[in-house]
Figure 1: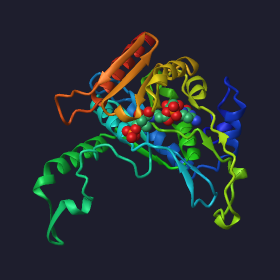
Figure 2: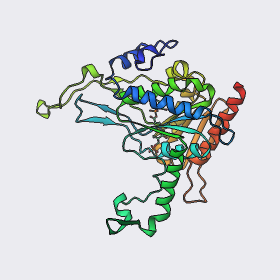
Figure 3: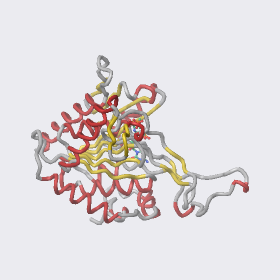
Length: 324
Ligand code: PMT
């Protein structure tokens, strides 16, 4: 199947909106390089087996997509997400023996960097002279641990980082990843934590140059970004284990909306989170009921992602057993 053109991959869903979105999107730069990297990554990890986890590969999406308002973009609409959820989850997936394709927004939080000091990196070092630079003792432990863990993941070829900025890039790369993981069948997992734009300006109706403020108030019509969850599930990666996220600021509607997403998009799990408490607690919605997952409050450095990824890995294992 040709993954370079989205229009060829909607067989069963046949969704005209999705076809239209891909047909009119600006072509993805470096598409052939990304495809090559993905093929190599999947191939290298296919034969490996760690912790009895075989060749499990997870695509973790992280950070928010932007919607450009001009083709030569000066202004854009952004979606909130620091990338903390995606990067922390990536670390726990790697620890569990998974290979991770980390599809992330450029400039957002990266795996193993969460623990680094808030001070700008350049201020973490002591400089005797230019050939004698050391990490300040106060930061030494965290900096060395972050560098070491990242290096180990990269050395064993288990982490592939692919950056995006716009909604166009995100969805085109997601499609490439999904199509290239098809050969892994049920060993592939999608963990869709990115905050994806719901509205966008179609490329052909977008101003080419910077919109002039001298023209007065801006009146702009945004089209709806088609939900890609159905096409991912049905056409792109029909045997993969799929987890989507639901973010709301109003707890009253959160679980109802997560439940609807589970049914409508035939997800295996939906992780429901509320904006203010998202680092403390999430509720995992499944066909067999809801599971509340909380971080260990007795430890100051504990992440909610630690028990969350343990649950995801257990459920993925059960899914694989049911398939074999
Ligand atoms: O990065 P942090 O600061 O740590 O924050 C993490 C988070 C709160 C962003 C994360 O935990 C989260 O909830 N991510 C999903 C937020 C979101 O966009 O929810 P939504 O209701 O808009 O979308 C629900 C699902 O539909 C998502 O899995 C998304 O991938 C998918 N979607 C959304 C829009 C679209 N056009 N197509 C999609 O497939």
